[in-house]
Image (tube, rainbow, N blue to C red; front, top):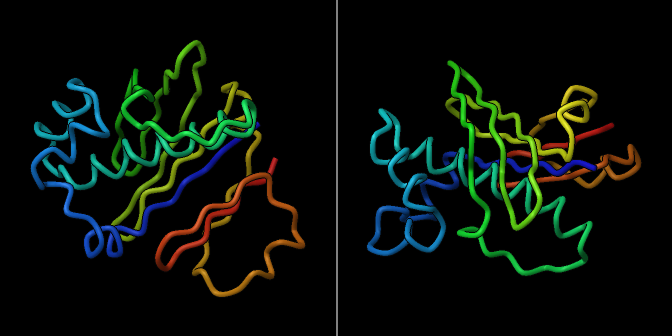
Length: 154
């Protein structure tokens, strides 16, 4: 099972004031807040960690059928950041999810899976969000934000 999340950085910049008092405390652990505050690009780190949590949440909610999103309970772990991407794990209760992220000046995209193998077997298509025609291609996971649509196929 997989989940994916995309963040349109331009849209996020318009819609979210993540610097306001208390915002980060509601979403990120102390360790994650340290990563944000010490990064050269703190806004990018905010949306990378957010997309990791959101992608893992999508798997968990499908498995458990529970729709309570409590981002502070999803903990980013083993984060390895590269030039245009990152890998890591999300810990949530007794579960661990593997993540792989890609980012550029326009978006952050993360795919999460129950196994590392599922990450390797997933095909991703990111396009401008224009219509619902993608539904006939039966993606395993769909995410959209702002200008972008991300489809994940197994």
